[in-house]
Amino acid sequence: MTDLPADALPGFSSFTLDRCDDLRADAAALNALIASPEARLILMRGLDPVLDGSALARAELPHDARAEDYILLGKDASGAPLFAALAHGALPHGGQFAPHVRQMAASLSPEELGLYGAARSLVDWHARHGFCAVCGAPTQAQRAGWGRRCGACEAEHFPRVDPVVIMLAEHEGRVLLGRQPRFPPRFFSALAGFVEPGETLEGAVARELFEEAGIRVRTIRYVMSQPWPFPSSLMIACTAEAEDDAIRLDEKELEHAFWASADDVRAAFAGDEDAPFLAPPPMAVAHHLLRHWLELQG
Image (cartoon, rainbow, N blue to C red):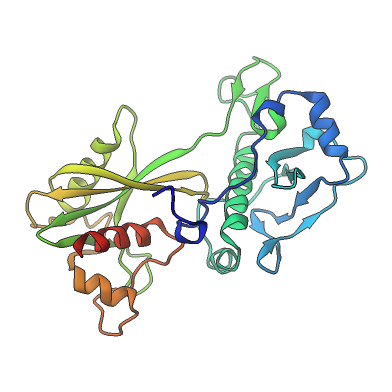
C-alpha cells in the first residue's frame, strides 16, 4: 500500500519533508536555519490552517526570531526550512475534526495536508504539555520543538502518538459497518477503538469488535495506516474474518450496525441515492479500507 501515489492515500499521509533529525539538537545549525532567507513559517490560526489556494500560507520569520519559539518541521525539496510557531497561552481543544477545518483541509494538496497534520499535532502537543508529568514544574521546548524538558527534575517529554485500530469484520462476502449517534444521517463506517496498554494490534481488533458488536474474529490482517492529527492518533486499518454474523450491539458505543454486501459498498461509492449508507470520504482511511476490501471481491 505504501507504493500508492499521494492522491490515492488517506488524508494526512503524505508528509514529504526531510525531518532533519540530525539537526534538532544542534543549536548552531538551528540558529542558522532560523536566520536563513529561505526559511518560512507555516501560518496557523490556533490549530486551524491558514490557506493560500491549495497550499498552506507561508510567511518570512521575524528578524528577531529565536529557535526556542519555533518547531522545525523539516526542509522541503529545495532545502528551505519550514517552521511552525509554538503557541503562547491556551488553545481550543484539538480532539475534534471540526466541519470548517474539514472543508479547509479538503482543499489542500496531499503533501500540504500531510504537512498541516504534522504541524497541528505538534502545536497541540506543546499546548497540552506545558507542565511536567513527573513533578508538575513548567517545561521548556527543546530539540527544535520535538520535545520538552523539565527545568526542575530534568525529565524529558516527547510527542506521543495514540494507536487506534480501525477494522472491517468480514463474513460470507459482507463487511460489518456501524454508526455512532454523532454521525451525519445515513453515514456508516468501519468500527474503531484505541489500543489499550499491554495489548497487541490483533488483540485490540478482536476486543473492539467483540465489545462493540459481539463479533468473534480470526485471521486478522494489517492493510494500511493513517496519521490522524485530532489530536494525535495513528489509525491502523485491518480486516478480520468473523466466526458468525450475529450482532450484539453495545448501544453505548454504536447506534446501529449492519452487514454490507459488495453491491451495497459499490452503490455507496457511486453516490447512489438508494444505497443503504453514505460512504466515508476519501480523506478517511475507512474509505480506503472499504475500497481495498471491494477490490478483493473482484
